[in-house]
Length: 297
Image (cartoon, rainbow, N blue to C red):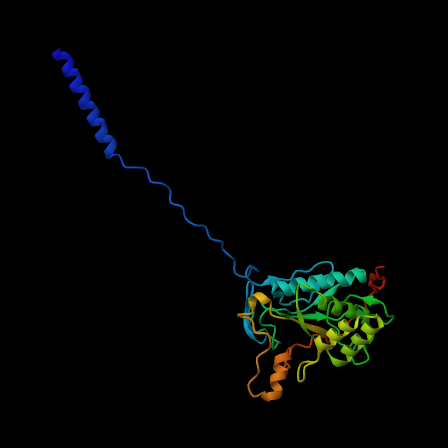
């Protein structure tokens, strides 16, 4: 009897000892969950922003324009812009190439990676501007692709290249492609007045609608006191709707420009005349015709 009581007491003592050890053992900590964040690399186009005016602003989240079989860039060009502008240029080059086989659009400066002042330009600061070379024909009227911008006089002949001729058909198709792009709102196309007249005449010849011709006439202009855009078209898109809070549509008025200067600054591409003359000083040999002369049916 006594022996059984001693066994019961021993078992009870052992149970109490195990319970104390269990209570003393620290509880396992649950792993802490940290909310993940998406890192946007500087220079990527996620959340792109055109901040400020074309001639007084900067650019965030720019997209890089890349070359393709329908689009090439001038050597040394700055090729960053808003995605809306970059895609519009790509789509326009494809549309022209579909109508004129093997055509290649030549593109000069857009903006620097973060925008701001760009050497040789009075604008191009916020990712909404691009210089697009004019399409060229050779002395026999055959379309050719060139590596440099070519300047034309009022008659459509090359200023420095006697064999070069202004390609009215391809240049009008370029203008039409840009203006009818429903994913980008092209606001201005800066070009010299004589070449503007040739393009509007080509539009009428191709039986473009009255609305299309009126729109092209309103968009194409040669701002007073600006660099003469006789070797390229300066394309400017409107502020995207999502950026209305930070993007300023028109260029800032320059100090001392007066009331007349306000209009020039509002519409001007590079009203200080600082934009580089891109036509090459050295004569370029006449290239062979491209298959662009064979229009797609």
